[in-house]
Each structure stands twice: as C-alpha cells, then as structure tokens.
Length: 154
Image (cartoon, rainbow, N blue to C red; front, side, top):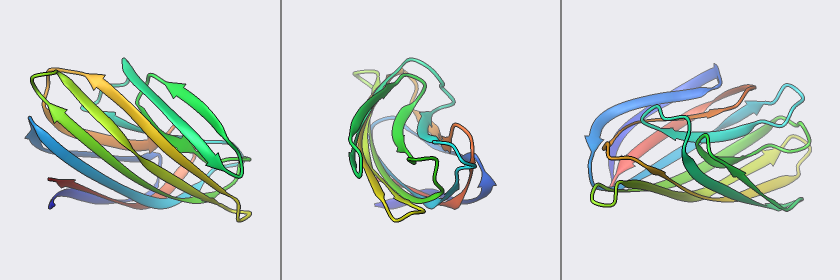
C-alpha cells in the first residue's frame, strides 16, 4: 500500500481530502477519532468527489444493539448510540472500475461508547459515476469530531 493522503481533523464535522485521480484500482481509508455527540446520535458518512446523493448504501449494526439502516446521501458507515460520546474507528475499502462506471465500498466501523458499550457496523455501498476518484470526505451529520485519517492506494 502506498500512502495517498492523510490529515488530522480537530473539533470539526470531519474532513475533506483531494488527491491525484484514481481511475482504476483499490483505495483503503482509515479514520479514527473521538466524537463529541452533544447528546444526540450522529451518523458518519463517506462521500466521493463531493457527491451528496444517488448512493446505494446500507449498514448492519451489532454489539449491544442490532439493526440495519439504509441511506442514499453517502456511504453510511454507522453511528454512535444512546446519544453518547464515543471513540470510533473505520476501515473502508473502495473499488474503482472505470468500465463499469461504479465505485464500490465496504468496510467496518466500531464505536466504543462513553458508558463502555460497543456498536459494530458492517457497511456496503456504491456510487454510479464515470469520474475517477479524486476526493473523499468523511464526516458526521452533526456533532464535533477530532481524529486522524489516512488514505492508501493499492
């Protein structure tokens, strides 16, 4: 794996990263940090090339609670639970295939909640696009997060 980009983020909704275009191949993204949830459940999303709609994405939750949830505004990576602050870690893999005009995604996210409960997520999705991958953003729908991210090309 070769490092493509990395960035810290501090007291923000998340981060945006732009990099050299990836037309075909694989990208791996790691995001870790702490969420100040401000007494609400907060969803975390991956968005590709600034696109905020037309995704097909779902996540399966397990741990101290179980559920399945769907979203079309980004690749849905999971959420904290019970309105609690939490530490989180996401590992996301992207497949970029220009001939099929889709960028596919899957991965895992863990939320270690402030009261020592755990929620784990398995997430899957894709975006139909003819554009190569040139930027990603990862962030929460609200709340404040601090942490670090790394993006690798394989």
